Length: 42
Image (cartoon, rainbow, N blue to C red; front, side, top):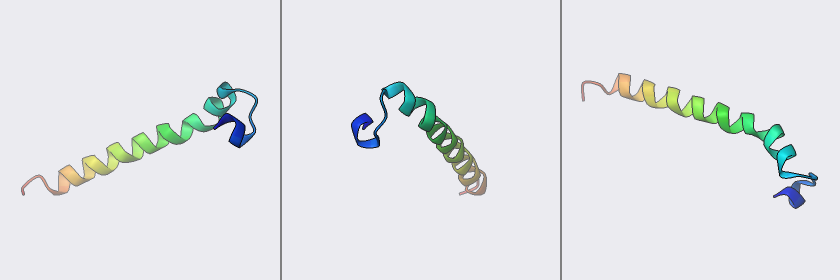
């Protein structure tokens, strides 16, 4: 991935893109919580 993106180190990749995975985790948790809330009585 490092070569494909043209970054000189894996640390650059982590610094630039880790926020994407953190945000996605938060979105997934929120979606699951919403699902559980709406399906609580099923």
